[in-house]
Image 1 (cartoon, rainbow, N blue to C red):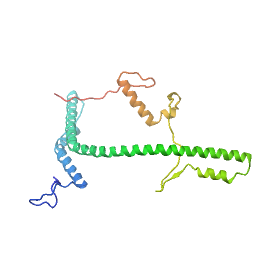
Image 2: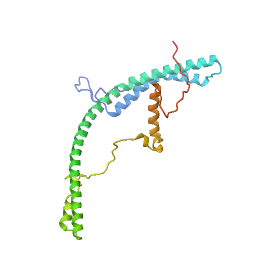
Image 3: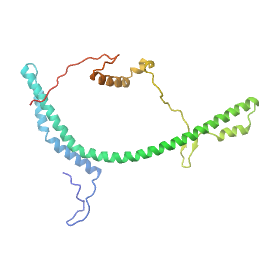
Image 4: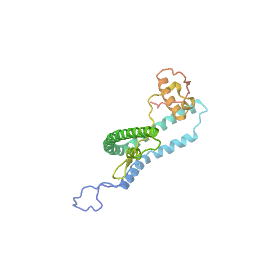
Length: 232
């Protein structure tokens, strides 16, 4: 088993604190832990697989043995899940600590960026408004005088909505799609039959049907499937 708590240059009487494991050492430690845990279950799995390969369900007695065998596999699956959890849990906890710290900083970054975007968008919208007003004035002037004045064009050019930063960044207004309301009755059949849309509808329908609520437009049925309970 890998021991990464002992410094590589440790000697008798050393006072060096334990060093942090490298990513490679952590991976190797995880491999050793899961291998040690699962190696204990491997002989039982091999035994059950041999029985599964010989299993038949042509009589009540044979079907009963198949039921028992399913229960044994289920029990082994439970042992596997516990072993998996025991090994994985410390890494998950460490991952949550890392994710939590990163998420907290990401939230601050996103909040600050959001405020700046609101500020910048407001400025650019006002700038775009000035551009429209200048163009309307230009069209009005051209209607009165076929030859546009250089001064009018200069005003339009000076009010371009795109802004540029000293560090090379640039920002310009762009159209984005926003959905304000969905009228389900008017949605086309082709949209409702899209696989991802159907998957969401079917999942929600199952929730309602399990609760005993009838869902108009949904045809449902029941299918029988063996469910084995562990013997006492």
